[in-house]
Structure formats: C-alpha cells, structure tokens
Amino acid sequence: GAGVSQSPRYKVAKRGQDVALRCDPISGHVSLFWYQQALGQGPEFLTYFQNEAQLDKSGLPSDRFFAERPEGSVSTLKIQRTQQEDSAVYLCASSSSLGISYEQYFGPGTRLTVT
Amino acid sequence: AQRVTQPEKLLSVFKGAPVELKCNYSYSGSPELFWYVQYSRQRLQLLLRHISRESIKGFTADLNKGETSFHLKKPFAQEEDSAMYYCALRTDKLIFGTGTRLQVFP
Image (cartoon, rainbow over all chains, first blue to last red; front, side, top):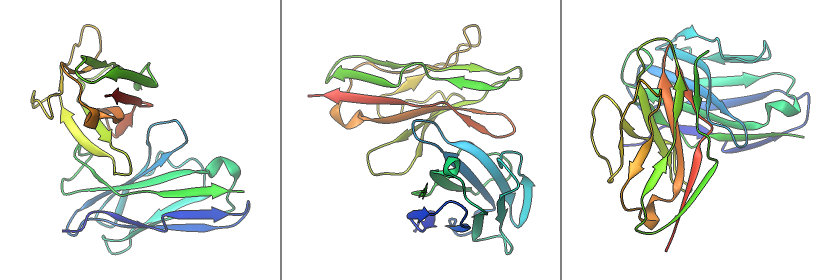
C-alpha cells in the first residue's frame, strides 16, 4: 500500500509569500504529525492531529504557521509571509495509534527554500 | 528540560568494525527511547525501541537510566548500515536528537 505522501516535494518562495504544504497520510491513520527539520538538525515537532482535532500546536514557531485537517485525512500546513528562517524540510508523519505513538510513518518531506 | 543529545555528527568506520552511536537524554519522567534511521534517498523510519529489547539488522540499544544513555551498537558494521541515525525520546511529543551520520567504508 501507499505510504505517506507530501506535495510539493520542493518549494521555492520569495520572502513574504504564503505557501501551503500538503500531506496525505496512510489511509485509516488517525494520528498525524508535522515536523520541521532545519539543515543539520533533527526533526522538531510542530503540531499533532487526532482525526480532525488539532490536539497540540505547541511547536508552531509563530502565528504565521497554521495547520488544518478538516476531514480527518489530508492535512495542510500553511505558512504566511514566509521568512528566510522558515527554510527547512517539513516532514509529515502518520500513525494508526492514538496519542504520541513512537511508530510514526514518515513522508518524504517538502523542502522549502525562502529566498 | 527535555533533551536528546547525540554528540557525534559523523562516525566513520571500516566494514567489520564495531559501531557505537551515542545518545544521551534529559527527562525527569520514565523515559521511552527509540532509534530512527534514514538511508540515502529514503524516508525516516523506526529502527528499534528500548521496550522491545530486540535486535534489528544486528543493532541493539540498552537503556541505562543511571547514565541517561541509550547508545546504539553493532558488533560488525556493514556498508549498507551507512545512514543518518536519530535517537528520539517520547514525552508528550517525540523529541529527536540532531543525528549522527554513520559512514561504513569497504
């Protein structure tokens, strides 16, 4: 079966532009996570959804970051007025378990470059 | 503070040599620790978790609460072990270390 997919795989944005990153989790997975991975760093937690409910958004770095999962499946991470420090790989992961599962299935990531 | 430290950015060994990738953690609760691996051009994936005490691809990791460590070990490295390795701690979220790149030379 298909794994987690993300689109686009690469995105170049001019500073100040808005971007939207999409995540298609594994079918039936109730939990969905977003991470930000800066160059040379490990993934850092951004936000967590259980079905359509956003249960934890403590990792979102500013109010320019917004995530949604309206039907409990596909999720979109939106970044408004992008800044250079937003340049990173954005990873999505899903899990069949409720809560913060250790066994998360990761997508390939979206590499965002802000110029 | 909750933190995972991987002190080595790069570890280079020759095929057949023993490997130890270091991981230390800081957490006041009962720790749950994991190792994730990312092979070249592949996705991040779970390698092993301390609870299961299993050996995956010849790798093992023992949780040492006294030293707050969870080092990953393999007695004889193979070229196909070359990858990025991330140690992770589960609290109310997964906290990853900065990763260690393992290079195994022929």
